[in-house]
Image 1 (tube, protein in one colour):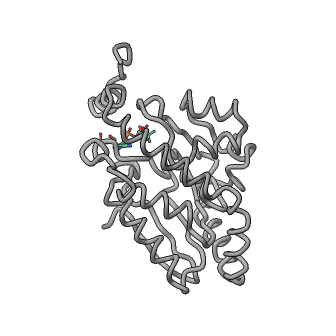
Image 2 (cartoon, rainbow, N blue to C red):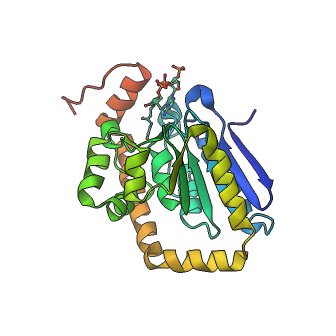
Length: 254
Ligand code: COA
C-alpha cells in the first residue's frame, strides 16, 4: 500500500500519512505525491477542502532522516519545497487532524493549515537545532508571530515537545478531543466547509493571508538556502548519524 493515501469524497480530499512502521516519517517520494495531490486539488472543482491526517498514535515523525541523507533537497524544485510552497499558497481551506507526535515538518506544516484539530495525546516539536539545522516552512517567522518570541524561542531553540493544551492556548489548535475522534471531527468540519460557497471560502482565505504572503515566501527561500547548506555540515551529519546508530549525538567537536 502507498505511503500516502488520497481519497476524495463530498468535496474533501483527504491525504493520509500511511507509513506507520516508520512513524509516518516523510520521504522525498511522499513529498512529491503530496505536492502533486495539492496541485490537483487546487485545479479540481470537485475538491473544495483538503484534509491531512495521520494515525491516532502518530501524525508524523517529520522528514525521513535516512532518505534526507541519501536525497538531500536540492533547490526550489525538490519535492519538499514543492510541497511546502503548495501548502503555503493553497487557495482553498486546509484542515489537519493531529494525534500523537508531530515532529519537524509535522508541526511546521500546521502553520499553513486553516483549522487544526488535535488528540489529547498530540505532541508538537520542532527539533531543528537538535539536528544541527534551522527552521523551515517559514516557521522562523510564523512561530514567533503566533506564540510570541519567548515561547517560540523555547520551541525552536530547545526543540522540546509541547502538548495539545499548550498548542490550544497559543492558537495553533482549534479543539482537542480523544485521539480516536480526531479524524472523524476533522472530516465532519471539512464537509461542513465543503458545503459552503467555495468562492467565498477562497476569497476570505486570500484576504486573510495576503498581508504576509510575500514575506512567507521570502522567509521560506532564505530558510531553504540555510537548511540545504546546514544539512551538509558537521553538526547535522553528527545528529543524523547518531539517530541512525541509535546513540546520543556529540556536538562537542562541531
Ligand atoms: N526518519 C526515519 N526513520 C524514522 C523517523 C524519521 N524521522 N522517525 C522514526 N523512524 C523510524 C525509527 O528509526 C524506527 O525504525 P526501526 O524500527 O527500523 O528501528 C521506527 O521508525 C520506529 O521509531 P521509534 O523511534 O522506535 O518510535 P518511538 O515511538 O519510540 O518514537 C518518535 C517516535 C517520533 C518520537 C521518534 O521516532 C523520533 O523522535 N523520531 C525522529 C524525529 C525527528 O527527529 N524527525 C526529523 C525532523 S526534521
